[in-house]
Length: 222
Image 1 (cartoon, rainbow, N blue to C red):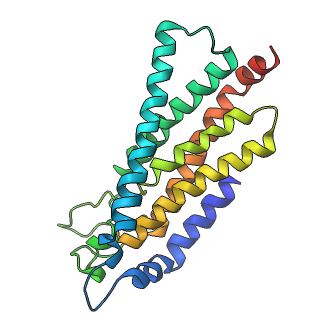
Image 2 (image 1 turned 90 degrees about the horizontal axis):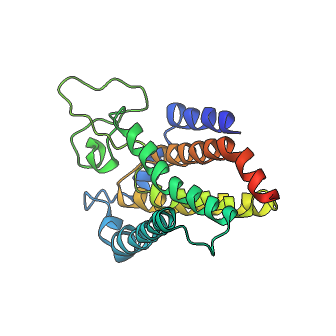
């Protein structure tokens, strides 16, 4: 599924203009800006309040995991301890992977594109950056990672309830994608950027799960 979705995302980004179609919809040509960028919903609520709540929740989770590693709380079962550590690790690893990938690409954000009042040309993945043009490093979408790591909570329903685990996984992915879509409304990212963030988050979490499946099954059966 990951391989098929990667091919589909590449095809969407390379052979369609859906990115421009979406941003054209949200861009106001008469005002020469993205009106959603200044709204309370997109800027204050989704980009600030929701982000801060999830980020601080992640900090709390990591703090609990570190404290347990130091003081070893007896009330926490080995299986619960493993699950908490898995999600804590995902809260760091998923954003780190996506932000790390950004350094290798030079794509700009929509509001930096000349089509939307910026100075950079619109480029697709693997297009060469024109001489003298500063790299954008706006790809893949970073803000979506705020919610994408929550997909790692699937571990709490494994291995005993894989169907519910799958629902939780896609719920986390959907939340991250929604945060990414709001960024598209603000002119901060293209759809292509958000799709690759969701793909990388899925790859990271499923890789972590694959590497720990044996240990998880052992803890669940003990």
